Amino acid sequence: MGPEQRKQLKTAGRVGSVGLELVIATMLGYFGGTWLDGYFGTSPILTYVGLALGIFAGFKGLYDLAKRTNLDEL
Image (cartoon, rainbow, N blue to C red; front, side, top):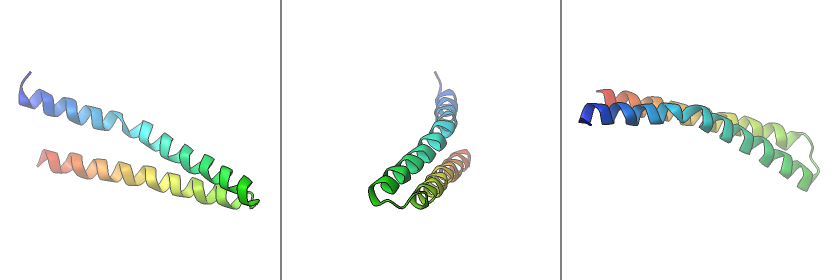
């Protein structure tokens, strides 16, 4: 396997993990907010905050991946 094929496989692995990263970050934010709502009795405020933070974290990961992939191509 040549260096170009390794680079392509590495990029494919990064891109393939994007969907999983988005889902996991969103779910962690949602369930973390739900748990905190139950603990503090502030339903549904912390659920919404956790969901928003999870979505933000997922898209931040997507942005970082796009930036890394773009830098690798240069």
